[in-house]
Length: 305
Image (cartoon, rainbow, N blue to C red; front, side, top):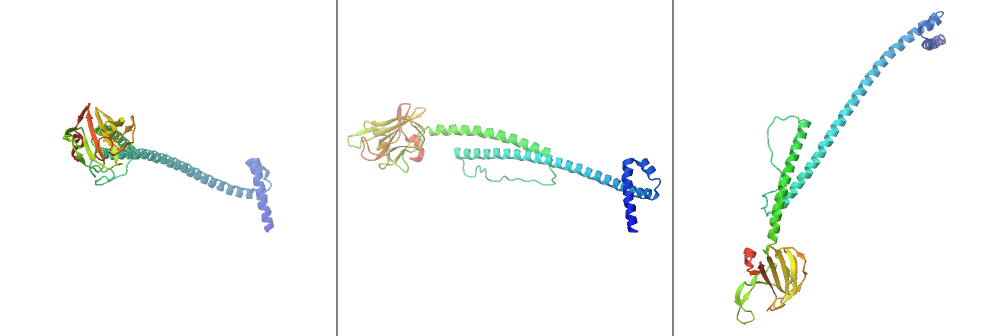
């Protein structure tokens, strides 16, 4: 019985294949003399047709899911591109903020502002109340663009202010306003005084600062060395032209450490103190000339001496 059923099913599949190849009509005509085979083929064909319909529906669902997945992937990639673009703009704004902070720090130092007057590292206080809602990407882009414009304007204004303060600093550094010796004091003032060698009265063209032999002698302002050598009565001398008619002279040095033409900055070492020339002991003789006329250095030194 089992063998007979197996042969019947096998015979039915063979007829089904033949039916597919030859077409429905030809298969029916060919099976007219075999009723059992026709019945089996019909049953199998019905099952196959039902399975084909289900397979088509599954394939349609799979295609729809694949399309949705593709759309979601496109949406994700577009969102990521938007995030990347915003991140790039944020990086640019951060760089501008760092530049503004650096400018502010420099201006604070140049302008000698008090501590805490302009503290660029302190957090900025913010406040507000609800309700809040999600921000659209377009609104965020507009906000970033506006902040970019504000940063640009602020940077331009700070740059102009920095230039003005820098020019002011250059002018200040070109005026003899510092002491030529650190931690010193004046031992002899400007003007008429008793001659230190006991020969009556004499006119003192500068002021003398207490110093030990070898102490550093510093330029009191920015300038160019206009003379470095010996002068009668002065011993070793350095003279610096500061522009605007100002020239300073540093005398009785044990040694000069700059040459004519050297560019020097305020506070830079130009010589070592000594007692060369007409001198009773180690000190620094300091003179200021304004448009070829010797003047009292005290008015440039302010209240420091």
